[in-house]
Length: 356
Image 1 (cartoon, rainbow, N blue to C red):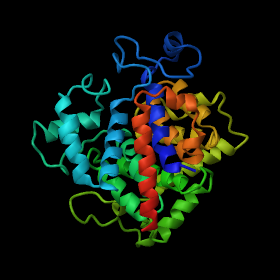
Image 2: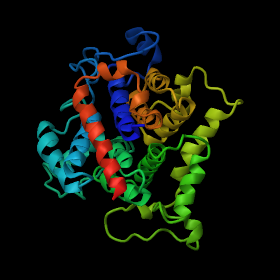
Image 3: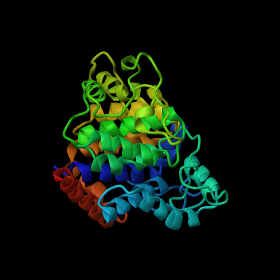
């Protein structure tokens, strides 16, 4: 099963499916303008976010994921200098620091802050992160988690290194790394069940996954060696438990969210990562073998449905593999053959990496 390719293609398709119906916080307006049930790619309406793009296009977040995939294929793994060089030369020259500008039709806060510090401010990478509490880092790092899935320590360190390029809040970084630790488990063959939290905590206890355990260190905070945040410095491993609880809710017959898109109302429609992750985990557990249902319920919930669909799409894509993603979603994705080629090559290189 092509789980690496399933994860990255699942994320890109989720991103593109939400492009035309992104950021409708008034659900009546969403239904009025996009129909009672969105089941495919839509072009953004004039005057809305991503206006001017076509049905099946990906957003700037998706483009950054593709850029990271290209870098990893070129380098046969994650090389930060190569990725940041691509951002410096391919993305930042197309930005001006304002939201409604640049590739993908919209530039997120964390990327705008990094651009201001890096380009006008001339700061080095490592000093360009900002305070956005959103999911861009978690989404971008999907390729890293999928590639290094069998090596939890290396995965967490590489994901953290990439996330802190744009995010500096320790809680946001911890949740971003935790999401990708969950994804790595799924790419390695697990399913998103209530037991996944215990599996991840066992990796922490065994030293394989570098999250700080305050109860193992005489209740002391983690050491803060160096100026740059590292995976082992998170205050606690609690972010690793969220997926298991969301899966428990999805499996509990006494907890009913019907229709499933209303998970956005339960966990919240805003952009912050603490709204997005529980909803994505819930959908990816409830529809763990049904990619179409997971992403369509994600986008039909409104609000920040792009992140919800991208995160859930990666999680379910990892569980069903590339083979389990409906063909119509691939054929409708613009530039799909380029993305597929990158995804399949990333899969091949990940398999080779596993054998070394």
